[in-house]
Length: 262
Length: 275
Ligand SMILES: [Mg+2]
Image 1 (tube, chains in turn green, cyan):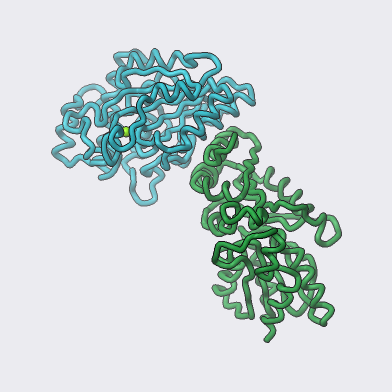
Image 2: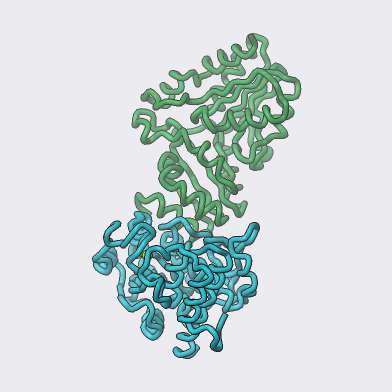
C-alpha cells in the first residue's frame, strides 16, 4: 500500500468485508496514531475482521526517538469497542495469537516488538491459547507479577532471583489486554498478596491501569504497583538501555516488588 | 425504469427526504437534495443489488463516503424495498437504527461511514477484493466536494490506479458548498479533473441532476479499461427547492412547517408519487 497508513487500514477494512483474511502491518507508532480513526470506524465500528499488526512497538526503535516509540497504543485502543488487544510474550504465544486472530472473525490488534523473542517462556509448548486467558509462566504463593510482551522475560528473571531469597512469586504473561482475564486477576488477588504489573507502555492507560481499575471496583485491596514508561518523552538509547533507565530489568522489577512488601 | 419515471422518482425522493427531516427535526437537507439524483440513477438503473441479493458475494457495492447525507440513502433504500418506509418515522429517535449516518444495522448499508475521507479507501479495498477473487461486481462510492481535502482520499486514489481498479467508480457530488462556506474559498480543489487524471483516473464531468447524463455516464464505466473511473457531478446544494438552493444555511437546516409546505408545493406534492 505504500507509506499511507490511513489508506492501509481503510483498504484492509474493504478487503475484509469481502471475506478476505487481512493483516494490516505497520510500525505500531504510526498504525495506531495516524490511522486511529480508520481503526475505530472502518475496522471496529463496522466490524470488519481485520488483524492490525503493530510492529516494533513500545521503545523497540530506541535511539530513533519518540516519533517512533509507541507508548500510547494500548491506552488509545482500549477505549475502542470491538477490538481484541494482544501483546504476546514469546514465539509460541505469537504463533498462536496469529492463528487465533485469523480465525476469530472480528477485529484484533496484535502488538509485536522488534528483536527476537524467547521461543517459549516456560520452555514447553503451549498447552492452550485463548484470547482473554492469561498464561501462568511460574507459580508461587507470595504475590504476583503480571506482565506482557517483552517485559515478561525480565519479570520472570526477577521472580527467579527473588526465589533465591525465599520469595515465591507467580508470573503471568497477560498476553490479552482486552478482554482482560479478570477471573485470573480475582484468583491472584484473593489473598491480598502484593501484585506488580510490568509493561512496555506508558503507565497511563495500559495493562496496569486496566488491572487496577478492576481491582478497585471489586474491593480488592492489596499492595499494588504499575511499572512502565513514565509520562515523559523518554531518554533514548537501545531498548534495553531505556528499560534499564526506568527499572524495567530483572533487578529493577525485583526491587519494585520488594518495595511492595514494606 | 424509464427516464421519465426516474425524473418523477427523484421528485418523490426529494419530498420523502424532506418529510423525514421535517418529522425528525434533524438532517442534512442541502446535501441530500444535491446527491439524490445520483442515488436515484445508481439504485434504479446501475447497481446490481436488491434486498434479496444483498448478502451475495457478487453484488455491486455502494459505499457512501459523505455519510451525513444519509437521508437521501434512506429514502432510496426504502423505495427499493430494503425496509418499510414507515421505519423512517423513527429517524434520529432514541434507540432507532436510522441515525444521522449510515450503519450496517440498516439493511442495505455496506459500511459504517460518517467521518469524512473514509469511503474511498474502503471502496478501494472492496474493489481490490473483487479483482483478487475474480468476481465481476463493481464498487461505487459517493464523495462530497467538502471532504476532498482529506488526505486519505488521495492516498486511496493512488492505490486505485496502482492496482488498475477499473471495477471502481467514485462520484463527486460537486455542489460547491460545505458547512463553513464555498469550497473554493475554504480550500480550493480545482482543477479537480486534472488532479484525478494525474492520479491515473479516467474522468467524466456531467450535470449531476441530469438523469439522462447520469444514466449514460454510469452505464459506461469503466471509461477506460485498467483505470478507475471518477464522475465529477456538478450539482446544486438544496436542488429542487428554490429557497434552499445554493444557500449554506440549509447544510443541516430543517424546514419549519411553513417552509416545509412551500417546499412540498414546489416539488409537486399531491401527484402520483407524493410521499
Ligand atoms: Mg459540498
